Image 1 (cartoon, rainbow, N blue to C red):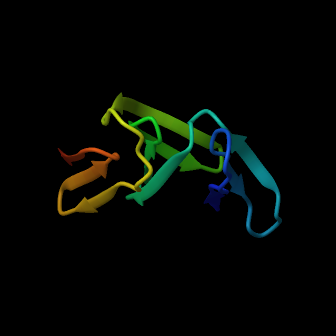
Image 2 (image 1 turned 90 degrees about the horizontal axis):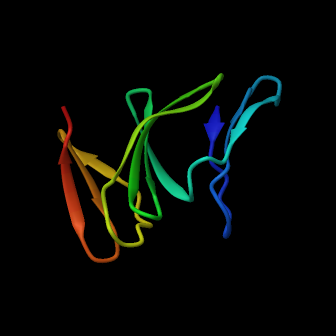
Image 3 (image 1 turned 120 degrees about the vertical axis):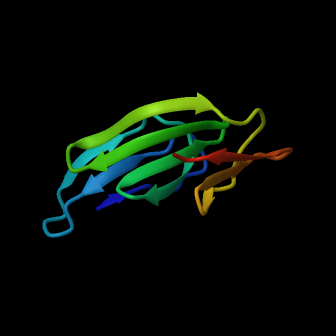
Length: 100
């Protein structure tokens, strides 16, 4: 099980816990505070700085495959998907990204 505990300050702590044993497999703080959407075995993360990350989560760790600046202002809303489009928004704008 991979999880993201919430906190008021600092980066987001992502961690993977073996649900049978309770053993923490890994902890990761490389991404600023972010909202996550799990899609097809991958995580789409939108951090509060408007950077969109595509990552893989596994018992071995969090691996970011790519990142890009999607928005210009503070982004606190989780990304969402409708059909083949990913929607992200910040405090002033909304963007639709066609997924292929």
